[in-house]
Image (cartoon, rainbow, N blue to C red; front, top):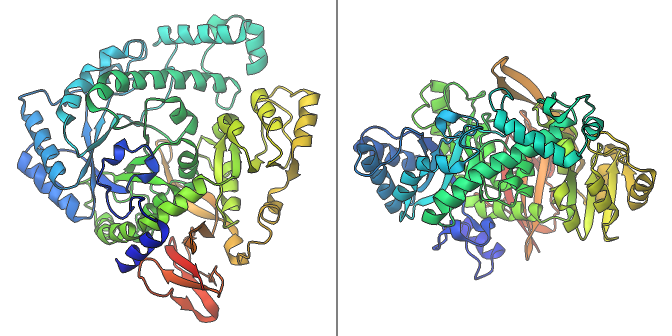
Amino acid sequence: MLAFALIIALLYPAPRPSFGKTPSHDPTKSSNPKFLPLREGVVFFCPDNSDEAIKQLEQIQAQGFNLIEFASWAWTLPKPGTPFQQRVSAVLNWCDHHDMAFFLMQNIQYNDEGEGGGLDDQVQNPQKSIPLISDWANALHGHHCVKGVILGNEVAPTLGDPKKSPIMWSQFRAWLRDRYGLVANLNSHWGSDYASFEDVSTPESGSPGLLDYNRYAELRFAGFYDAIVNKGLKPVLGNALYGNKTNLDPFLHQACRAMTMCCWDDLNSQYPMWRIKLAADTTGKPLFNAELHLYEDNYNYGASIPHSRYRYFMSALLGEHATASFAWGQWNKPETRKVANATPHILSDLKNTQAASALIARAYQKSDLMVLVTRRVYEDEADGKGGGVLESLYAHMGALGEPWRYLLETDIRKARKGTLIIPEGQISQQDAQAIVNLPPSVRVYYLHAVPTEDEYGLPLSKDMIRSLQKSGRILAIKHLISAIAPNSGLPQDYRNIGDVSYLGWRPSRGFFGYPVSYCLAQVFRARTRNGWVMAVVNNSDHDITAPAPWSMNNKVMDILTGGAPRIERNRALLMPPFSVQLFQGMRR
């Protein structure tokens, strides 16, 4: 605690709020979401008895958790005077008095008519779904523990089957007609051979038509949930955090304008970190991993204490504000119990170091060293196969040991200074023009080649290609470090790129292994008034020993212990598998 108090005093001059404590004001109403305190919790299935519910809440808090995600469905509504409403009130009252954040997860399922999200029914008229949330809004009103509402569980944009959703598809085809005018223009962009717009069907995986399909599906998905928030929740609950539990597609979260929280479900405790960073850097919203699988008996993905610690600490470093582990009461197998029982100590350490993690996360999200992410590049890699350019760039940019961030194509025009790295791939005409229009204070590097095709695979004009060539330099990824940070002084041991074996799951395959590219020993660094804070991370599954990545001229403290770092012979720092160590350095 002494170390924590010291870093707070050093990093945050008055009157800024402390990250070590929950601010006295309601953080959900803060004008700056970056000042939200970390919340770590569990998915909570409420028992049928109020006394048992309170007993479980006490156990949850004793484990170090300070958040519950209360699961509900279309058939579990807290109607006034019902036993369920009384249990909900008991839970809310307890949370009010014990600093337990309450998030409702109400399963209003887009693309499911039975759960309030039929494509040709409720999505066309969201007012029909509001009765599924109005009783909940009234029950939550007035309880200061309520921080937000999550709509939907593992939902994603889709237009459904054309035969089962004819209204939705008629509207999509009309949207395409307005966009292209002639079916010949559509065929040119999609590489298709439709005789009329009425023949348009679901594009094949990887085809250019998916760009338009996904754009329109996102608009309808966002419009549906935004309407429920604006008409059913905000009039009662005000400016709470609102989200829908979906994937980490940054373009989807950008489309959901009423959603003030980027809420997602990883379904995989070994989720690749580049995807979390991409959302944290680009959505501008607090991130909430609302279904983190660290201990659950059936989907624990090789549960281990080091990996559990790694996930909690990496979430904080990358800028994720909250997690809810799935699911309380389902951690019964010996191997999962062992990992879950280590959580109180992990969360205690996380709380005592979160100020440094928050400072690092902000430094990276504000960096003017940027990697461009286009919709085409993202969607080409969104199938989860791994090995794509965004994953590779996460590894190589991590080897710089300096702050950097992802930038969406929609934000190119906002770049006023710094360095912009453009991955190889196709780029829209509008984005190509935005790159050409960047001020000279933005240095542009094209990874491997200047784009020559638009997002549909059609050739850019020769004049545009020449303008792009004049606007930047071509850079091979192997030369990235020497071009961007030639004098950082970071030891070579922190620049090694390699694959880490992860465990995934698919209905058709069950559990399966796949490689993910990382900078194996990675440094995250942020400057302070008098020095720096640093996280040294071992992303691999084996021990790494490397020279301490700081100058002998710095006075260095281990933030967690408050003492000097444990250094081996020859100033070597020992990094166990999946370890995260935080240090503070001050100039002598």
